[in-house]
Length: 337
Ligand SMILES: NC(=O)c1ccc[n+]([C@@H]2O[C@H](COP(=O)([O-])OP(=O)(O)OC[C@H]3O[C@@H](n4cnc5c(N)ncnc54)[C@H](OP(=O)(O)O)[C@@H]3O)[C@@H](O)[C@H]2O)c1
Image (cartoon, rainbow, N blue to C red):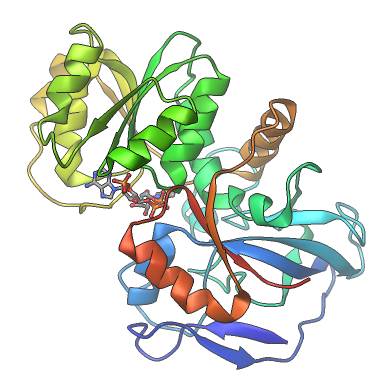
């Protein structure tokens, strides 16, 4: 079978190699991969600036979907022919995050999914909603579960609340769809007026161009009549956190998710205490959250926003495209059939 591998010092893009097809052992499942999707994290992993200090060659990408084609002994959770996706952290089934669960992420701590066949433990899979294509379902494990955890699980989002989203990448557009599903108002920022218009068509109530309006937090303040938003899905990092703290209401919530503009820098912490803001770190989520999210996706017939699907042979171009930041939503790699 063919598989990509990050090799050498990780400064290279992944190499496409021939590998022997894996076989499922006890409790394991062989999945013929049909699609994979890219996350910003995959760029960081490829550059060696994410996670593990020591380099080991790995198959990249955490997010993929496919069809079950063989079972090892003792498998009861899935059957041959089932349509499935891997969960981001293979050991994070339920409950709270622990160091052990955190150390089980696909395409980082362990081999990922950019391969024609992947063996998963049966516990590390979820069935995907019937109405979604493999390409659509491949976008769910990281970006969608993260947005779900931020707004629904930790955020306890209620109808009528206001959510602030930064940019139009994968996490933010899933957050937009979940926020609208829950009956919330959405204010979204982007570097592009054209992307803001597309976000409006998806239901965003207001858009702010953060390039032409660098003090966008003032606009958020005005749009909420000086109250501030109830939730911020913070995918920016250190450079946007101060603006997010200005944008959030007294007692509001900030889900700390991203590192797009860095992880270190000055933050005025007094706003956190004076406004009694809840800052909650989010690291994707559990299988339980993924399954709960899939039920909502199926009930509300939510289709993930896919910008572009690249053929398997062009996975490196897909990574370059994601890095350019010109995408709106998810970038996907088709794998077979
Ligand atoms: N903690 C977790 O569990 C978790 C899970 C998933 C992702 N993440 C992190 O969340 C971030 C987003 O991930 P993603 O996969 O959704 O990324 P993505 O799809 O690559 O989206 C990136 C988009 O964010 C916008 N952006 C870039 N710089 C920005 C800035 N300074 N301010 C506001 N928006 C900015 C741009 O949108 P416009 O072109 O519209 O401006 C860009 O296209 C990354 O840092 C990623 O590592 C964390």
